[in-house]
Length: 294
Image 1 (cartoon, rainbow, N blue to C red):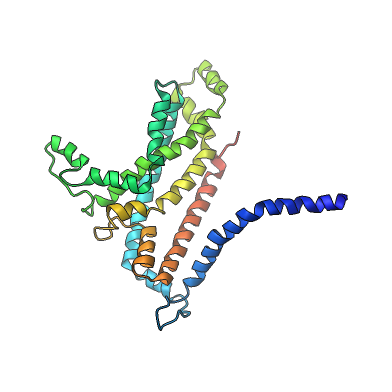
Image 2 (cartoon, one colour):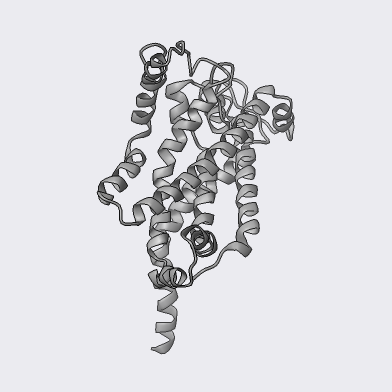
């Protein structure tokens, strides 16, 4: 009887995990392995089946100027969006965590962009950026600044996408920082005030170190978000002009479903996964000593 209970416990646990494990393997592990294998084959066509070509897809990728352009765009996008959205999220969380009049309304206002559908958000900002009749040009007109095609200029198209991303992501990250702030014992602030510590000193020496576990989580998610943008690009610019606003995942989508070159798209996907893995490992290794759990 005792032996049956010892066996039944692990079996019951594995049965509970089975549905999630099946979904994980079917929609995560299998596509990763399948994409990696497909990157070593050519794209099958009618009358020309797929065949093994080794590293030819990777050689084509290295010689592809568009790949390097979108990779550069993605690096600029990530380096601009991540620090600004995370810093803004911390600032908003600190603001709504204190005694603020109408605090609930302000929290809802900060979080509202997050719950809006991506397509709706893209169309809202499309109106903002429309030349002459858009909100941005209307404001510029008050200061006699001439109309500008914000999404049609190679110098401003990517920046417009970055502004949109910060506006949408900051409120989402704020929720995590707000939860972390509410988990900090108020006695710490009271003791610091008694000792004569200023609010900025307390935030820098006490609050920020205690936010590091949440900071690590948010940074990993922000990095993933910066490489998975497709919807906004599709609605606003379609990667133009001249690939100035195209990012890596959108280029993968374009290659796979626009040019129907699934093998090359698999190669690009492998590179994307490697970049995300390296970014996550770097963040964990760099911030491991800075993370303090209560």
